[in-house]
Length: 440
Image (cartoon, rainbow, N blue to C red; front, top):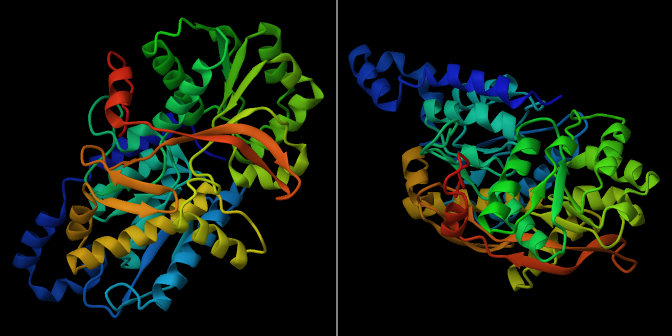
């Protein structure tokens, strides 16, 4: 079970209290203590001098959302094999990745990060599936002075460096679409409908409440004149088996539109129960922020309703570039025809970003890696992007489209699919006057 974000935030605050002992302090102290004391602490320094390169990955590997960790592993392993077959990183092979299960729990994620750095001596960290866990781990990464490429967790606060609850720092980067970018795309999509009254149904933690807050902020900034039905908002607990009370609560308010941030197994359960309540016949406009995740579409088969507006953070059919087509084909060849999810693409890209940075720097030094990532321009299956220097967040378009089952592909696809540009300046301007960071 994923902890509530408030608990994670308390833990993060506690961890920041220990951040004062940084790399410079260590070097100063080691000079006094002499070389004899260095061996046991060498793991904290990351890489250097080894014939191989080692990465640690922290994901949900158990429970109702384990499919996300599984998808990420497929992306990492494909990238590792490709890189090693092509000669490695600066001639060094990538070791088998060291995986840790976050269990969707902040303290467990922090323990995993510390173990991977201090005991396993990894050269870099990747992963995280939960915003709540990411808020706990980010401050610890700064303490550990180790690069972390976040591949899934989407809260803007993890790459924001200013304002209440911001935990972004020099060592935390993200190569996937964040919540602000995704919900900006939802707001643009909503603006193209005739709906004027809106409410939400989302998971009862940071991701669910922040999705609603950002949707209101963006649509207010766009001056769309919406009425927000706060009394009809519904936040079921993660892993809730019965969504019927929440479905009825929303139906009774009779909104024109509903934005839902439910994800994974919860979204599948919700859709199936909502169909039984004729939810999609009664609500004219339903926006599912991660409804086009292939981790959801694949098990749904032809039971996914057509005509819904669904978002995702990468779509296997777009952009139609040689790089993306090659990635999709190779991924499918390795995985029995399975289409790659956004989590797999983000994981795949993360290892290549490490390769790019290490080879450009000629070093696995943490500070050299993060220096190379700062402002890096990179071409990935998801498309060309720049890592924003102000936030360490990849500037990526939001992907939204209309659901339509494809008999040929055996999966629901987006038709049409829209890649909605989400420039950092536009997001920041729309959020002015709120306490919500763009995180990009």
